[in-house]
Length: 399
Image 1: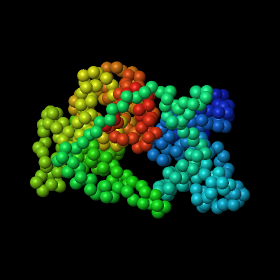
Image 2: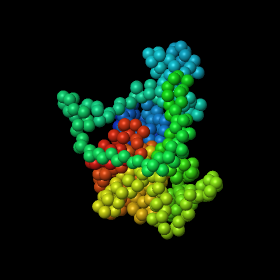
Image 3: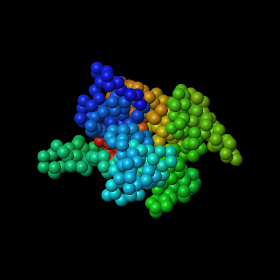
Image 4: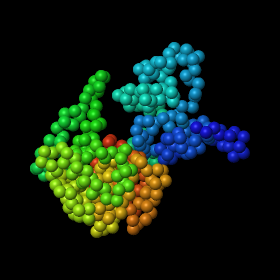
């Protein structure tokens, strides 16, 4: 990090006792100018407010710890001797009332036991929970409304009512048989027990099951469509067509009788759509909704996805159908993300569909200026994210 110049006439170091930052996920990256600006203030205390504490992953907390750990001397040898612990001690195995537990609230402890390369990933979340108990205040819709003098109402009671419609998307009989076949292995290997007896899901197989339930074609090409390939796919002028070509190639190589279909012409959008819609009841229902709300009524819609592949699937369809949309994905720069939000929230005649992801920090965005319809294409990873995604819109559609 750059060192501020204390002799500069405009230096603000130490001027403020308390600094409050809204949308604090903007300063989670210690390599950004925003983070450095706040750090250079050298305030005695920081209040960080955000609805997206970990938008990308557990490593995001590294950046916040610069504003939590204000005592850099706790790990000195003389202090460790007073606490009667060695530097190699696992602080999170100590009782919570042990004097050395204070070391948990340091950058060194977080990097060593939670976010570092050598940290035990099976325990990192449990360790972070102990850190959060000391520095994080969480408000949900069920929390008491601080504006209610008598503290009798919950926050959720002060918000407008949502109109929610849940759509059950079922496979046809033949599709269900194919899904069962493709999902046999990931279902069998989905869960396993840790050494401490806790039951956890295997992310790889959970992802495959989500993709299978979205579109059966992902069984063949899902490994080629992920966060690392988003930029390449989005650069193509006809994503759907190239997906179908890849699907055909994979089936040609793997099936004894060759591919199950003939590649349609690049301009034959109806036939391309037919290939995607066969094996995707979620997509069939979603396109019906977009046809009504966007094409006919010119309404804006937010669609939430849990995986980049599902975001790209929806982008491919909107692209082919000439539905003006923006796709908020992980590879975008801060400026590109800002431009997408601006287009969706300020231009009434463009960017009709906002394709967001639960895991790219977009559920905390203010998207409601011109939009009050939202579709949960995938289930949210937790109730907090679900509430955040729907809480600022007046009506919601769940599929």
